[in-house]
Length: 303
Image (cartoon, rainbow, N blue to C red; front, side, top):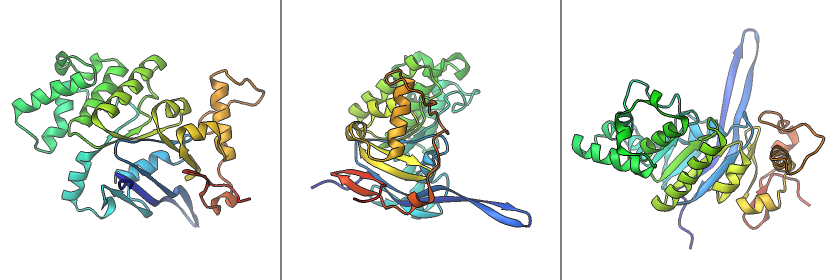
C-alpha cells in the first residue's frame, strides 16, 4: 500500500484583481485549479513558461501568498489552517531555494552567519554546536569550512547558490522548493548544482519540488512532472513517459522548442522561448485533467 503524500496540493487557485477608476476591475487567474502531490524522497517538476503561474503556485504552497481557493496539506496537516507556531514548525521541514543567488544572501553577513541564520531564528543549539553544524553543511554542499568567514561578494554565482542550499538544509528539511535555482548560472555551473541536488536527494532522502522553464533540467532531475499553461496543469505524468509520449499540444510545442534550442530538430518555426507560447483557450479551461494512460493525465478532449 502506498504511503500518504508528503505534500498534497488540491484545487489551488490564486486570483489577482486590479481595480480601475470607473471601469470594471481586471481579474487575472494566475493559478487555476492546480492539484498534484509529492511523496517522501520524490523529485517533482513543475514546468512552464514565464507567466504560467508556477512561481505563484510555489508561493501559495509555502504560504508566502494566500490562495484564493484550494488547500495545501503537508505531512497530513493543512498548511493554510496552521497557527503561527504550527507554521513556524512546518517551515523547518519545507524550505525554499530561490532563483537569484546574488540577491538571496545578505551582503553584510559572512557565509557562516547566513548559513547559521535558520538555526538562530529557531533557537537551535549553542553557539559552539551551530559552528560545528555550519562546517558540516558547507562540507555537504562541497565547500571548505574556510568559506565560513567570507562574504557573498567574494564568491561566484555557483558558490553563492551552494551557500543558499546549505542554509536551506540547516534545519534538516524534508522538502525543498526550488524556484529556477540554476537559471542565473552558466551551463557548466548549473550542471554542477543539479548534480549536487541529485546527490543530496539520494543521501538525505529529500523530496524536491523543482520549478523551471528548462525541460532539459526536468528530464535529468525529476521522476514526475506537471506542465503548466496559463495557470493550469495541462499534463502530468512520469517524466520518462511525458518525454516519450506527450499528449497535450502545448507539451508537444514546449518539447519541440527545447529540441530546436539544443539543435536536434532544426525547423522553420520561430523558437518558442519563455512567454511566447499562446495562453490557454477558454474551451480548454473547462476540460478536465483526465487519465490517458496509467499515471499519465492530460487536459484534452475525450475520444
